Structures are given as structure tokens and as C-alpha cells.
View (cartoon, rainbow, N blue to C red):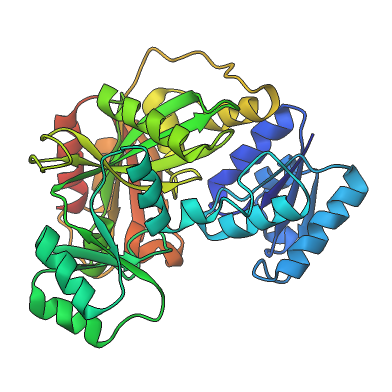
Length: 393
């Protein structure tokens, strides 16, 4: 089996996908723009071969790399990047090389465009916030009068909280339209709730081999207000989220993937959406959760999601048994320019025995993820809150 991994060096823990695939007898063929000598040794050992391109943005270059691997190794069975930024290119490559294990070009819009995601939610009666594709001020005012303020505006295609704002009143709405964005935007009604993700590895018939839940803060506020980030993976998936997550992946018709679906857990009742504690769909991401979240799933569930994924690819089933111990795995970060009560040394002295990861993040992640991060494994929510206060207080 030949598996092409696009940009296997980012995030740097993704070498583990390559390692587990190789252990399962797969030829793992890397394509990236980083020089081979700059790859980590773990990644080098996991790759059968690496093809460097000058730019992953250049489709012709990447196409030639895939063609070279197909000529040398035979038919390509999989192409994946696991990265939101390259999903459209992945789909185009699958279409051009007739690779059926993944989303192809004709379906990629439904998992990239928020307006089309809403269409699928509504067609399948999955509760979700009402949305308006930004057009004219007159239509924007009509939508605001229908759903009320505040409103959330964000790019129709995008990830994270980049260029996302909350509009509080009609004056701010008019200001937004006075200098309209150059790319398509959507406008949604505001929902009071916390963001929870349903993360899963799916087999060929869209059944989950692994499921997890992570609770996230509003990343929009982290970026726009320069706040510290904390989020955590939970020991268990609530049954309401499990059921809705499974319905959602079937509605989108995805299979043989690691997926990251975002939902609101309502903190107060919302007509048309549900009662407090119910879930409503936010958006789908047909790739693993960003950053080191897959590792946090490992720590929370005492498992190896990289191996579960590799077994899905090769065997279409899960080989690893369910673990007996499950935990909260918590990420807490610090930013430059903030003043903290406790030093790095004090944090390590207090939490070193449960510290699972600790490092400086890449500069491109500082606005969202913070510059320095600490990730621990804990047993109770009380311990979670105490840890976050100690790191960020």
C-alpha cells in the first residue's frame, strides 16, 4: 500500500501517523517544502521516501511529485495532509489520480464552505444556528431583525477565529457594511454556549472506531482580546454529543477519516435549538483537531490514536482495546507581555509528575495557542481549574 503524506512535518508530532503506518507495512511517501535535512529523525525513519518541492502552494510541483511516486512505486492508495489548509489540494490530487480513499474535488466545497455546511445540517434536521450569506446592508438588517443581536460574522471559508467578529448593534452592523470584506462572509445568530468538539476516526462505512470530546474556549476572544488559551479533552463523550456526532458524519457521507466536528453545548435554552445542555452544530472539519490535540486524546484515553488511524487505513477496523483509565487532559498556555504569578520552575515543581507535554510553540501559533504551553493529565474538574489558575494566574 502506498500512502502519500503531504507536509508530514507539521505539526511536528504528526510523524507518529507516518510511524504507525510504516509499522503496519505501508510505504509512506512524504511531500513537503522543508529541506530533508531539517526533518526530525523520527520522521525520516518513518518515510520510505521524501520529495521536496519549492512550494506546496504550487500545484504543478506537487502534481509532479505524486506522479513521480506513482511511476516509482505503483498505484497510490491514499493522499492525506491532515491539515485544513491543504484539504482542497488533497481533493484535487485524488481526483486527478483517481484515488477513492478520501474526499474528491466534487465534494470538497461541502466541507470547506460554511454556507454549504448549513445546507447539509438543515436538510438532515441537525440543529444549528441560523445563518445569512453576507450580501447587502438591507438584507443584513433584515437578518438582524429576524434573529436579534449580537451577530457573529466570519469568512465563508476559513479555519479558527481569523477575521471573525461579534456585532453588537445596528451601528456596528452598518460599520461592517461600510467597508465590506473582499471575500465571501457569513453572518450567524449568536448562541450562548461552550464549544465542544466531537472527534472521531471513521471506518469505511462511516462507523466510529474511536470517539472523543474536547471543550474549547471562544477562540475569537483569545485572538481579538489577546487572552491566554486553555482547553481540555474529556474522559468520556456525553451520549447526546455521541449521537449527534454520528448523525452528522453520516449526513456528510464521510468515511475512512479522522474528523473534528464542532458543536455548541447550550448554556441556556434557545428556541428552535434545544434546552440547556443540548448540542447544536457549529461546523465540520474533516481532519484531526489542530495542534497537539491528537496527543491530548492519547493522554486522556490512555490510547494511541495514531495506531488506531493506521489500523483503519490497513485493516478497516480497530485493533487496540478500550483502556480502563480515562482522564482530563488540559492545555494551558502563556503569552508574551502577560504577567504571571508563578515561574516556569514552580509550575514544573508542582505539576511535573503529571506533565505530559511542555514546550515553546511555533511563532505562527502564538496568537491562538500562546508562546509557551503546559499539558497535564488530571482526574477531576476541580484539579483542572486549579491547574489553569496556577499557570495563568
